[in-house]
Length: 69
Image (cartoon, rainbow, N blue to C red; front, top):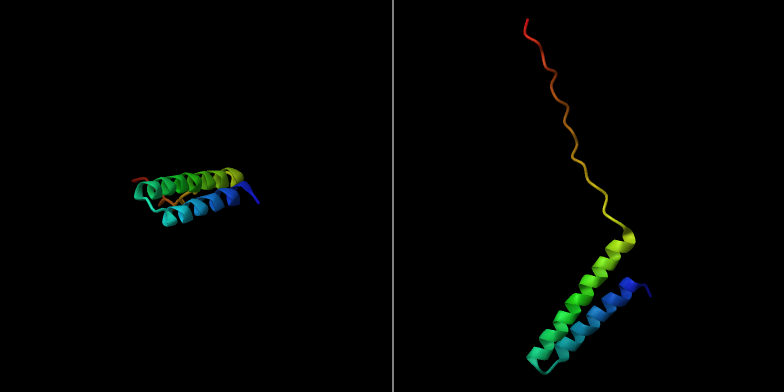
């Protein structure tokens, strides 16, 4: 299992625990932990795939400038 898959699994596990928590404060803390795992998973996935390629806007051809006579 890759690090990304592990982190995503842990995030889901924390969400499951939040749903089954009897105390609302405890559920909130499980959700916060799940969010942290999810962020770590996305950061790790971005690190493993490398930076996104730069997108360049196409350059429209400029009309030729004419010189007055």
